[in-house]
Length: 264
Length: 323
Image (cartoon, rainbow over all chains, first blue to last red; front, top):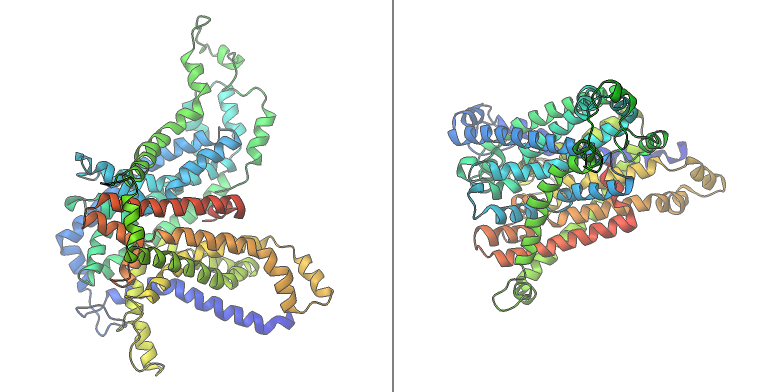
């Protein structure tokens, strides 16, 4: 490799620059959120926690945060239950049928969210179902479902299906076989899917813009108006919350991955 | 998603009499005294449920997706053909007014530019990701996947702090004396491109890296030993072998960029809007559902047709599994 040294250096410099670009918006948020000015500036001239205090004390921000956790929990639970069942069904299908059904499941990730949002909004607009969090939860469940299915199918494919077959042939009911044999083996995959679903729902903005009403506003919607209409530094404090939450989720999913590889 | 399904197939081959399909109750179940005796000719519910287990398991998900995703989307498409004077009313309006054609053109051109930029920037990164040491690879992968893990609004807000005229980058450039007046880098196409390239880069890097990791080093060694200079080796051996991955990744980036809403809305100018913003405006402000539906149908058809082309000729389906 010695004759190509200069080229390798050029590549390294390029890669480092691109990686700086990848992390820059994330790492700049945290120091910016501790700025003491009434507008966002980087680097901040004075330090304060006033934007965090505002974030915690203002009822609309607090309300939106609570809503977000509620919506994300409901969506994650429904997506995990429905998606796990679907994953169990998928691996029992013949390979051709399986890839066909799988591509149906992946549709919500290919169709732009704005289309899904408008379509669902159109369906629910006239009905009372748009009130409260029902509409958002349905929308988020649809978007989150593929992540659960992908994770569960991956876990099932790593697992030796003969274990479940033996349980069944020894007389275990399908439920017993699932609960005592399959679930203990695939649970890291199911849990990873649930975390993916939670994070997807917690961060989702486009669907939420269309499907929430005043009382069901989620944190991203609150941030959206904070950015679009008032350039409010509270957004920076809220963003820090997202950065921290993503890091925690990432660590958990990483741990589950390792666990999944050892149990399966 | 793991694409390797062979262990499952082997299982099936090993198990000619799979318990869930067995017509007769197996010995163990009989011994346990849990076999129900059903009169001949009457379908046994337990057997029926067992036979249709996959369908039953898939039912909730399929009902949800068909009822609350596929049907509403089709209804939207149907709505786009309900004009006051003809089925193609709304579409004619798009074609007739230059302002709408401009929005379409801007959206598709910017998406294409994002795809090309991602392919170019992503190529060396993919190379390092595929050939670097284990530690480099892990670090790169973690950094590349950051946009997947970050709320889009957080990314956009971060870029606003970096790119706006009083922002961090301009402050740096002014201090270094590289510019005398701040360059506006947000509220215009520059901001949109930066945001879109960052969020889409993983889709351009991962398939290429996977492709590069599979390359047989001996081909390159053969080329070198036959006397080809490095540039020749790259142009005539390495590039042709990695190009399919590059095209697949760029196509995916292009497809996904067409429907972007948040990034152009926050980092772009108020006048240079994209299709998705036009759709949102027509629903929330003008309440012209038919016209919004027509615009949505255009985005939908473009996305699905390009995706189908990608799956058919560029193995796009396998790209998806990377994320």
